[in-house]
Amino acid sequence: MAKLTLQEQLLQAGLVTSKKMAKVQRTAKKSRVQAREAREAVEENKKAQLERDKQLSEQQKQAVLAKEFKAQVKQLIEMNRINVSKGDIGFNFTDNNVIKKIDVDKLTQTQLINGRLAIARLVINNGGECEYAIIPASVADKIAQRDADSIVVNSALSQEEQDEDDPYADFKVPDDLMW
Image (cartoon, rainbow, N blue to C red; front, side, top):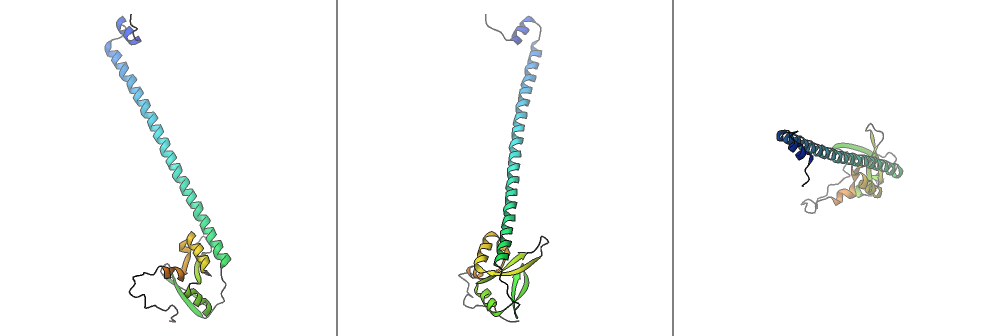
């Protein structure tokens, strides 16, 4: 005799009808499908949470790195700052489309024009106040690698950026014009 399942045995004994048996099978299948969908939803939520955590971690790393670069830039500017006695020549430059002026002596002006010296923006406090420091061009290159916005004037950089096909390349505008 072949082995019968419990459902088949109950059906043969007349304790359940075929409709009730079909209904039980449908509800059992529904519960299995719902359980599988719930597991998939939980797994999807875990993946999404891991992705959010990964992005948040990356943002925090970037913030720490940016803060570290700002501290390095500030330290480089403060350590390599050249103290220039107030001169009688005003050196004009632009910072964020605003014309600024530093009083320098003739030697410093010449070195700024030739690209031996550069002007860097030194942020004093978190309020956004800044002052300008004259630094050697080699230090300005190191600072530009970390934060290019801190370098306001670097003639060596601006000479490299000149267009090779510039039709007015032969007509240089002097930087030492007195207004």
